[in-house]
Figure 1: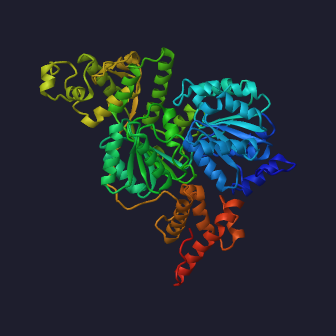
Figure 2: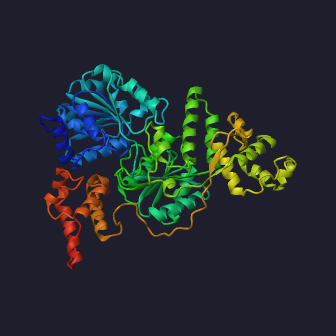
Figure 3: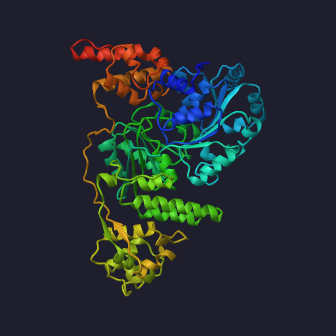
Length: 619
């Protein structure tokens, strides 16, 4: 085992941070959390994706005597973390359904012999009596319960097995537990504490802000073409995830991007298991691949260099949106969270909620989550206050890294236009969709308008001084604000809500944002958001060496070194192993394993620069 002993826990933690993981300083609340768990106390940790949650239990696992048991529902994440730990010289293994019988027996024998610092276990396996009995026979350092929000029946990733994890407090009361999650509102936090830490524990809430992510929300016009322009202008050659509402849309989008010259694959529950696994493996192991997926994709994938997450349709809630966008930029380098949506998305989501058979309390919660998401989308100010406010964190705004801060939208007093629209919905019988309503407001004598006699209602033509796109924007924002509701039967019609009364009577006013004009056609030339020239020979040589090495070792490239570490190496230009050891992300084990190869690649670049033959990247 790789356990290091010292007299001062904080000093020991700092030593391990550098020697094993290659980092000089702790981030956020990491030090406080580690000291709490090392001292034997329970902890509830809420920290954003990419914020360094895993170090909060991995370092205590190396300090405390015994083996740490990490409970995770995600086989892919277990595999990635064990591979990453092995490449840092840490003894770790998994016990889950993906193992053959021989491998499972070997891992169990290593566990019994005290040869593991960490063992990763799925909750289903952990709860089996033989596994609990096995754990009672060994020295345990701690229990780490990852993705702890899965305990919540109100949440988006509920796993019933998590409700039974209270057995850990009953059978192992002296072993500290740390519950970790990246997404949990106040209700979910309470449920995690009650079910997983019934004997108490300290709560650590780090900032959920991801300053490296640029949030952008646009109005859907031609979603696939808008996506294409976005990728070409900011992320050509980068890995990304495109989330779609349906399986068909995911398939169509992947096909469209492939036709445009991008490496793009679909991922959804309708594909057979072998195809899904093959597509996921390619995404993990290759650079520049784009996955077009339903929400079935992304959980448990520890790929740090996802440069963008795009939504072609509204996610289910702001909590889902935060979690899905959090899969971008885990390495701390610049990344994009880009979304387009339209009135049809709002209608579709509201209809699904209205047709739900869930208990009324849960339906109410889901409606509140949708309202928060819609308010975020239509917000005219900095994106971060409404996004982080949902998670219980204050933000002063003016982040400088969202669409509204970079290009502030224009707003207007839409009170009269809103009253016209609401009155038109009422006068036409509260059963027609946006296109028909706009025709009536504009005074268009279409066959359908004449058929229903709507050329004779009082609202016919009263909005002729406002253009069609603006009327669609007004109806969308009234729907988003809850003044309009979709037809519960799913026929596409709009009706008035109870809350529109004051607005319809003119007792309150409303301001709306003006939708931006369609973006001009962008150049196909790549403008990278990573702070390094990704077309330079130096960058390509380092990535080529990393890819060859990863293929030889059958691991994802980021297990060798993250993009951020490669960028730091290029910036530092070390010429000796001692200089390379000072680069962030280069620990002692990786220095010994890869250091000389990295220096040879850099030396080959220097030789090429002065006209000498280049040294072939080691692999």
